[in-house]
Every structure is written in C-alpha cells, then in structure tokens.
Image (cartoon, rainbow, N blue to C red; front, side, top):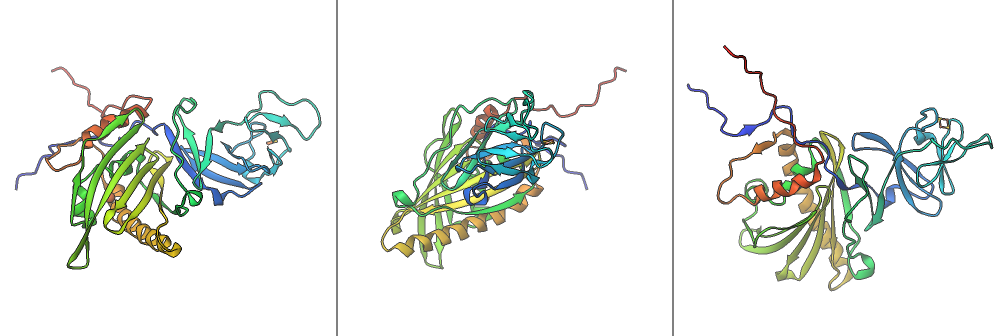
Length: 337
Ligand code: FES
Ligand SMILES: [Fe+2]
C-alpha cells in the first residue's frame, strides 16, 4: 500500500512564537483574601499574588531580590509585602521600602511587578514579553448591581495554548461534529478593530426529539486570554454572558477558566437555574474540546474548505500579539554535490 503524504504544512516541535501579550486571569477575587499571599505560576515564571490590608491586589516575582527567598513564606504588612528571610519589605511598585535593620534601604532591591486589574470577580494581569504597559483593557461586564447574576467559574488545566482555545470560537465546522449541535452558521463578517475581534454565529440546539431552539452568539475576543460570548435565546427571553479565559502557565500549558452569568428575568431563582444549565453546557463542550486541544498539532497553513469558519482572518488577527517573529521550521542544510 502506498503511504499517504501529508498535504499540510505541519511544523514539528514548534507551535507558537511564545506567549502572546495581553490580559490574563490569574485568580478569582475570592481566591485572594485581604492580607493573603498566594503563590502562582504563569508566563513561565513563579509569581506571588497578594492582597494588601486595604484590598489592593498585586502580582510580583516570587523570589526576593535580596538573597532569593521565596516570598510565598512572607507576610503582608499593611500595604507592603514582607520577606520571611531577613524582613525586607516591598511596596506596590516592587521597590524595597524598609529593612529589618532600621538602616538604609538598598535602592536596587526591586521586585518585578505586573499590571493588575480586578473586576467581575476576577484578577487580571497584563503580560508583555518586553515589560511594556497595557494599551487596552478588558471590558467590565454587568454584575449583580445591574441585574445580572455573578459569574460562576470553573478552572481546568489543559496542555494547550491561548491561540488554540480562542480559535475555537471561530471554528464553526467543529460545532456540529464535536458538540453535536443541530446546526451552526456564521452571521455577517468578522470585524477586527485593533486588539478586538468580533464575530457572530447562530446555533440550533435539539431539545428532546421534537423541540429545537436557536441561540445567537456574539463573540468578542479581547486578546487571546479573554473571550466574551454574548448569548441570546429569544424564544425564552434569556441573555447569558459566557467567558472563556486561557492563561498561559508556560509555553505548553494553560489554566482555562470558563464562566457564565445570566440576566435576571422573572423570579429570582430562574436566572440561577439558567446559569447552572449554561455552566453545564459550557463544561460539557470544554470536556469535548480539551482532548482534541491536548493531542492536536498546530497546522500553520491549513487547507480550508467551504463551511469552515473564518480561521484565516482569525490567524491574521493573532499576529499582533507576538513580539517575536514565528520560528522557522528547522531545515536541513543543502549540501552541494
Ligand atoms: S532574602 Fe528576602 S529579605 Fe533577605
Ligand atoms: Fe468547541
């Protein structure tokens, strides 16, 4: 039998040119209480997340610039982070503000820090490989004060990359095959405005053997770590906000957080029942996607077919989040005869 030849460009041992810049969820707000220190790993680095006495959240490098102690064993003193080894204290900009000796402070002792935001029950950190400051923000969504439920969140560790998981929302072709929806179609063209990509699609859900309903999805990709999906099911007057947030632990692993929030309509428990159903559906879909993400290769130049979603446009959009050029596939040297 003749061996089949790959007709696609598969780049061995290479997936993406590093960690894309952008905003990433590093914890839920509840995971970091006042004066608590939480060691975490993101962006290939050991980090420390802590909340000051007044409630501000900070993200810093995990190792003390003095003699290298891990700050996870330290303590929050008011607005400062105190190292357990020699008692040096670090302020919000990472600078050493005090030593336990009561003498001069070493001016060069400075922890690395990451810009942080907190809203909708999440703590977001800005990652830029060259340490540049953020030039865009992720949206603040309506919460309980605006008549929506809080987000319910699930976190899952997956061997994948944020570009792969975000690509899911434009990959219309897999919706029927992997998730078993009754039908899926795009509505209008993708819109790209700087870091923001917007698209819309419809999905038909079978509900038992006879009933069907249609849900409309408006996707907003705010960088590769934060996708918002606004779902409306007109037939039942339901509006849901779904979040799909991929945070890179290192080059090959992410923490994927999925979340849902529902607009309150009718009696109060109704929105929570809808939220449970949405969470169940989202978790089921991620459970179907994850084994594919974990075992797939990144095909740099896919051969697309009519019926695929706008994958090419999505990939062009993604390029802005990488500082380095994509690595070239390894080529054997050509030896002249
Ligand atoms: S190692 Fe942190 S104060 Fe010395
Ligand atoms: Fe999917």
